Image 1 (cartoon, rainbow, N blue to C red):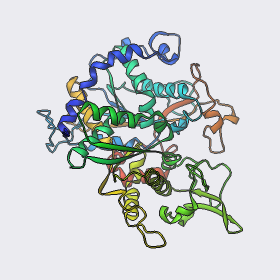
Image 2: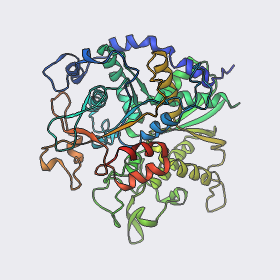
Image 3: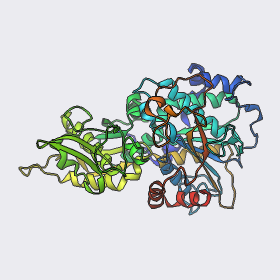
Image 4: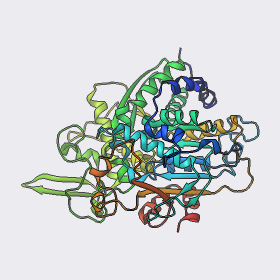
Length: 496
């Protein structure tokens, strides 16, 4: 018999695994940077956790991601009303759950895309980057600008960390949890993957469907970690779910990068293909754009959204040049993978396994409706029976916010302020004094340098500076304004 899981039940389950933390801490070897942060007072990464504030309720909540995608999680945190603030019961009371809380948001954009580190065999360096993100939020300083040689700015450390990045959660949650446990600060960390899977089971609990297919759209690094499928199986087993779930994983090369306008993946200033393009290309292999599927992708070809070249009637260059086209390409690719498997169960949900993807939710929903009715040249429905009539995307941010609130409440660390909370925003940029050959024409780290660095050194190749119009372009701000109005309102107050 299937055991249905309600939102309130999941809220309780979120804390049932806390007893396993000690076992995980004992089994996790420390990265060099973790040893330095905990024990080496001569290292620039030493954290001096003994000086961490003992009263944490008035400290800010820290949220970090590889770029601006994690702002989709911040938006939910700012708007969430899932809990009665008096009783703590999971029921809305008309008052935002995090009313009066301050937030610090960190975008590690200089080091993105996070999803490529595993592919470049740089997993340990990537894990180190995630720990550095956490250490920045736990520390009390920042760089005033990219030309600073020292971190001269002062800020408050954070009382809880939210990893608003699926790839960072998959590869670094255990490291950050271990660091925090050994720090003695009492600070805890929340990751988005368990939250997304809990959201899935909450959705399934409200339906009578026993056999479904569930898609996962995520970065190459997240898919390579197998974190989502493993967690779907584990949480389902732990909570007595007896239905059959087919998991369709798809790595979305370039999707997150296109949202953050990374020049190797999207460059709106161009009108013709370029050599530096690193996104999907036209071809017949796995991960390629298939010429026979162009009608299904239904790309936007206007305003340079596709950069292409034909020779003798055949495409020799075909480059995606808009986030919307990346969204359409990867959605169809996932559906084609499901179709090719021969599975008969319909796709009921797709988990947006990267916090950048909800920026394109309107495009994705529009594309799903098109594909439900998409016919081949003979008029046959191409994806008939493969998309559930009640199909729905899942954004893990809601359950991330719930777990964050419940953790702060249980630890008696809610601010309980009546005044409106404030936001501080920081973003990573190349460090001062890097050799010119380490930078590209736009002043960003070159691909080879970015993925050629080694872990365990004292090098600081990137630093964290405040949000500004210099490091957040008009297009990025416009996207935030249109889709994340509450976050944009906070950012607008601080950006210079």
